Image 1 (cartoon, rainbow, N blue to C red):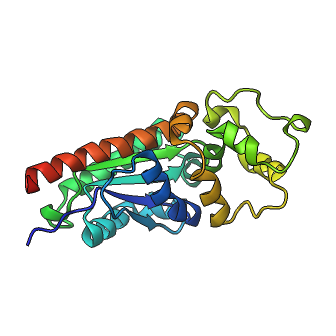
Image 2: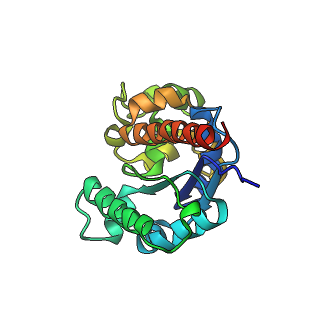
Length: 223
């Protein structure tokens, strides 16, 4: 009996991403074949230190066609002084992922067709602002009384202190809770978010590519 492999598996660094990303991915493309598997590491350093082990565990357990690895750039930079730019981080992790694919750690039938590295710049909270219309409509304060960018072109750069600003906008909320992350991340419009955050655009496009890749796999193996 031939088992249908899932389209996407994600490796993420925190609980906020773990509880949010399934709904976020289906918001990007609702036709992706279920299930989507989200594997949570024990923080950013666990991904950068143990990437190969995380890939092996996800591939052996669920066999997704595409694996997307997501991590905050600013934390990775703090954990590794050698990392000077986002490109450095992507290059290092991509090379390790390529070497892992070439190794014999797992069966060929379990290996993904693609491993994509997405760096969230600088942190996940910047994605909250990628649909600024939504965030302004839901915030608990008068937006005219605080310093808020009139227009967000790239949330990755335009929002300097995302956690501080979130705290100002939502004083009654537990802003570090996974529930809050899910509420904000999955309620905005992904197409708008794609336009207003370069790192979210990368994530969005990787999800769409994974859908195309999985469709090709299904056609080739199941007609």
